[in-house]
Length: 580
Image 1 (cartoon, rainbow, N blue to C red):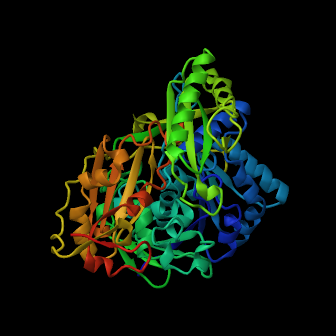
Image 2 (cartoon, rainbow, N blue to C red):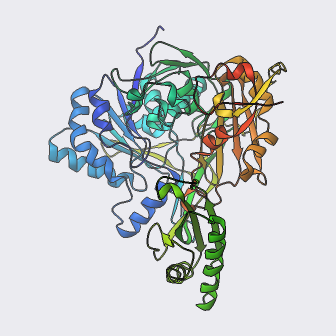
Image 3 (cartoon, helix red, strand yellow):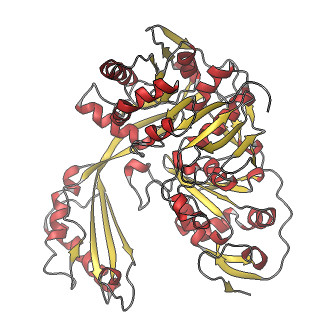
């Protein structure tokens, strides 16, 4: 490819709590121009909000500072810029802390930060932040910053900002920006792009997957890119690992952001050598006139008790303890919590050779706006049953006094009402204007489906023998992306996995709104399940509050699959059964 040399952008963090030594690994593992770190998620904003209540000087990801104690010198020696959203709710505070650290370790660096995402906090809420784009980051880098700290920006902005600064893109370079958004989306979750959390992990050398390397993107001047990783690091980069990450926490064909709306239905993936995947063909459209904003608040209090039921009569034991618990609450004269949920998880086996394998788990979760309603009244009612309930009574841990849970809400605000500001290394302030051209977001018409797969013999088998999946959360909604790896499987999947079949396979979704999006270029379907997660991950409304494993649940479900497709599988999973 002709033109200027590509910009090599790496990632060293996919969330607050990711592998601590990733910064060192990425700085020493091979050539880089920019190193990014994504520390923010919906739940993280709530955590940082509570941290700031205790200490107004905090509200940022302190782990980043500890990573910089060694990383700062390495980045300076190698000429690597660092861009991170670790500033959280206090980017100015983190920028000052970085300057103090640089002075202490004797590394001369120019530090800048981006602000303006913080919005007036409505009554009853803890935080309110708009998702900014990459133009503030670009302004800081153009002004000579070595380190740029932001608050709430889109995850992809950590890539679009450096790329725009390096290649001189303006707001009208929509295709180039869209290409960078797609690359940024692949990088943002770290090792999920290099074989982590990957549906077909069993096909790869276990030694390579034990410690996947973090990903990097070689961004070109036209916005195309190659996803890869440092030579010699673990993990795998191939068409399927990149496809999986592209589907993660996205929805329809239009992937909207503050800089550009990227058309996911135009993404083209091609193999470019070992552990290299090229992304090109991405088209961009003007961004919407509004910015997404996230609001967090404390929603109430929750408590949890897990009873262990061992051996025979598991269901009868569960019925007994449920009835006894209800009676104990009534005798205590306390108000029943607003939400009481029981879930019997049959982890037990017949004639088990260990006690643990002979045991099931009965999970009680209570939630209420009043801490007292889920505190000692609940733990006391559970504990008092210890000597007068089912045989073998015990719990996995002593009941606690309850803990607060949070709620995340997404709203949209006019982009012109948000003062996106770059605070430059010299202290100067540059206010970034929102894009002058915008486009209201509308769904793309569903593309034509391929011809159906020919009828013939089928066998009942798990969907996962043919299809991969990856799932995640967006507020209270769950996203489930499903893809296949050849055209014949796509002809079958596109017609077989309808919304009706999806609901049939996942009964928890039966009463919810499910929307299917078709992405033929990726041989993929993306499902959005509205309301599956209640009030979001911080509310912990279900067993898997971030929907991380919904895709794997779907893959484990059995349905009639054409025999020729099953004969292409790699020998993993249970043997299919013959079906009429």
